[in-house]
Image (tube, rainbow over the protein chains, first blue to last red):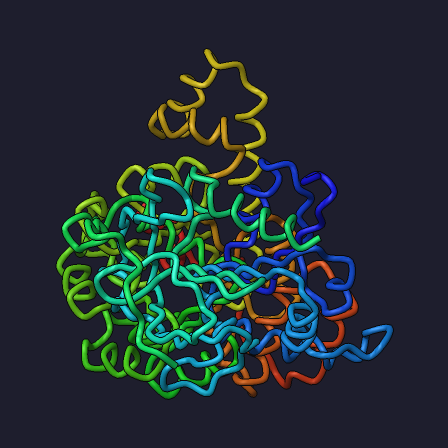
Length: 206
Length: 311
């Protein structure tokens, strides 16, 4: 079943190659997404780590290229529409910021789908970035190697949000229907359990 | 929205005791998040803001941009900490800053200030002509310049978490960055064609540790992120380097020495993402005003070359 899944990875800027490798290892065919018109055939989408302000600038730019064969809607709007029609979307670190409806103290561009509030750079500068073993009941007993890089924290959640992992400062993994958010980076570990969880979310929706 | 309730089942292990900062994984991961992006040289908070608004994925704080260092001469050092603090406060993207080669105290100060990554840079005057900084001793990652695979692996063995080509900074001439990128990628391809027992003499020839040579042979690439730097002045230059295989680009004097920095910066950001799309490249390259004047790398006298520092 997994072989036939077409999973996109937003590839404007960030560590999309690491996600692509993980998906290939799991037998999927990842597609790098840089234009809104590439989204149509996808079964699911991953938004990688990267810089959220950079991605917000780029997604707005892509829709205005006069070289486009047909006028394009901005990528974030296209993702929002697809996700509202049921396509599973998973955001890691930056991806979770772009998925959140609320970014604390910021009006920056976002997809704005998930009923969570995020605090950017919640741990402080890079010297506070850390590896933290995480207890995530949804993944089984074995701790998951959480890698937090200038990471956000999720500080508020709506009623329909299922919190999947909490650390001292706040929560760092959550699911709301077809949306998944992690403040950490499963794509740069050798553990594929979060990627499998996301593939299951796609499989169960089909 | 409701306050978060912990779903933890009593014994809760996600505490601070288990936390490990400054590991090799954590240090190499920061540059990995910058891939496909543009890191821009800035000398003050105002420029940093322009860079962030244009879509830079990080800024590089330095005292003077390389073309001014070339013009003014004198000793080039780490930036004034006051300026670095103002830059950190002005933007939400990562802030890097340059320290002199071998000047580990400048690096200690930068780490203390909350800089996200140190560039141990040949663009500044060297503080030690024999030794680089022992970067393994720091919590934050370092980026270092390299002209070839041997240099890159020597820096990685010292703890560099990111490599960039040296190019010739401050010239606006991309020729040296191209040379360095081709040299590194070409050497990796040659290495991969060797049998395992031939790797020892290859390691000796390029002056690199055998364990890193083996790692590169197995991976088919450097074990850290590899950006282009030195002489990139146009969207086409950035896309050229991306098509050659680098993970992202640094732009130094090329932005703030051009006639319309905000517009040129935004165009280079787009060119770095859409580096394989000639239609987009043609579009974003239009009407950017004058690029930095520059001078050809060939016209530099031997004493003006920066790339030969710290090999």
